[in-house]
Length: 229
Length: 125
Image 1 (cartoon, one colour):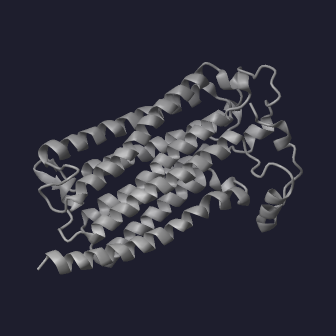
Image 2: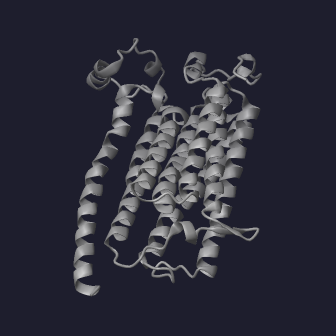
Image 3: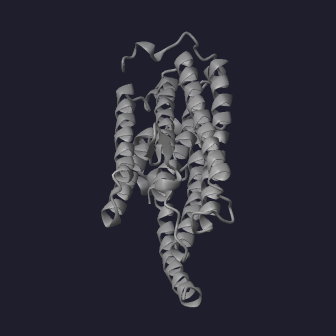
């Protein structure tokens, strides 16, 4: 791979603002990280813009509609033992995703220790939690479509834009989670078969981790702006 | 849990120039660091959930939601995504561009308010 050995052999770098100038100025690679990591960060930056555009569009339709915005606290409540608990499923989904981020962070850590078994196990646990999240989302969508009658063009509770914003934002996020589960399984398999031991570096596990943490990060914003606002 | 005993498995890399243990070790932090952040994310998520559960409203609600959101986002990016340990050049390259979005958000807020006003004037008599 183009993981250049010269990258690590650079002289002790300057820190702080002077370091920024030094990194960009000299005739060399700017970011002293594996190319896969730099590219993943840049991809995530572009994804940040995509999700921000969705959330900004949502803010815009919510501000500009004259109809009442359906109260997410009521729409997403669940009946438990006769009580109505607001946002219960969403709270559980949030915890599941945070837990998956925790297991992923530890998978990356064990990857750097070259612990093949623990890295594989933790990545598969992350994938399983991700799959759990998507299943709960499927349940949530089904309930919303079948029981509440929410459609992208309208709903019985108020502003018709609620449905389009909801399906667009959570759908795109759910797609990211699903893709992440596949990505995790592929990399976990490679960890298990010793691919990264032969390659000599576990950096792909960290790059996968970046993607997964980003999916969790996006959920933090969706949770705050869509469900709690 | 942060001992070094499990840092090497029998699966040694087979003859590759990149098998540099120093490169692999500079990203190592004790597992307890991640456990702590995980716990804190749980706590702050519960706090944001409590905001809804106790039906806090108005400015207090929005302030709390945004504070908890930013704290959680900060932990994820800084610790889980290792941004804290990256060089300043990479931090700037990734964290500064999203600030442009504040302009978009500002403009869309102005536009949204205007659209609301015209809709109110035209349809909602």
